[in-house]
Image (cartoon, rainbow, N blue to C red; front, top):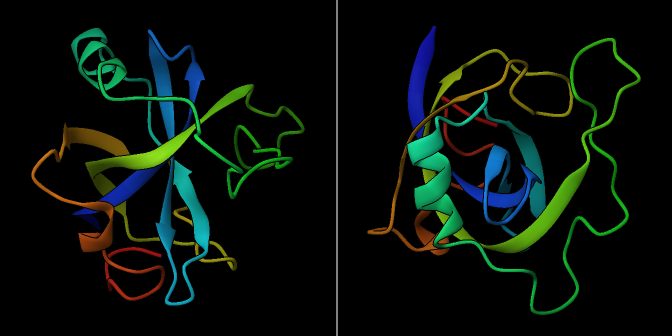
Length: 131
C-alpha cells in the first residue's frame, strides 16, 4: 500500500546543483532529525527545482559522520552531501517499515512543499503512513 506524506530533505546524492536522490528525515518530539529513507532518482526538472532551494548546512548537521546504505543487503554506501534541513518534500511511500522505523523502499518524490515549514511535517513515528 502506498500513501503520500511529507519529509525533510537532509542530504542529497549527486551535487547541490544537480541532486540525483534525496535522503529524507523527520524530527521527533525531542527535536532530533531521524533518517527515514531516500527517494528514487529525481527527474531532471525536479532536481533543478530542488537545487534552487538547497544550501549547505549552516552549523553542525544532525547526520554528520553518518553513513547511509544504498539498499537492503548491500554493503554499498551512498556518497552524500549534507544540506540544511529546511526543505519539505511530499513523497509517495510504501507503508512497510524496517525495525528502526525507516521506509523499507525508496520513496517517489511528488513535489517540493514551499508552502510548508519543517515544523509542519509530521513527527517521526506519528504519521500512520510513515515512520
